[in-house]
Image 1 (cartoon, helix red, strand yellow):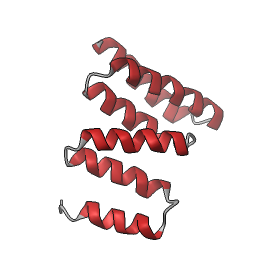
Image 2: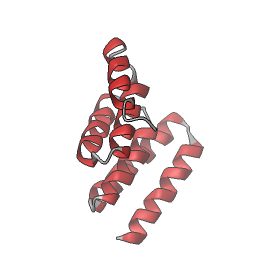
Image 3: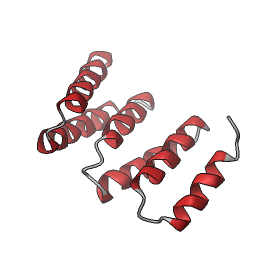
Length: 107
């Protein structure tokens, strides 16, 4: 995959500043490039700005668990589970619950 992807995504976001998917995609690209701290910061900001964007909780919890922030990862799962319930998204809720169990088991 090209290393030009991040600048391309940022250019698109500059044109569509409110695009949640682009913000999410940038965070995932940062993760792929190994910039875990910035990916976490971007995902945390996305959760604050758009708590209804459920996929963010899963990726943020994964990253937090990867860097040893287990307590924070479990908290993100819990908040995400509540958002899934509010949204009625049973599939995402099941996936996030599974992730929460996996993180808790690793702790």
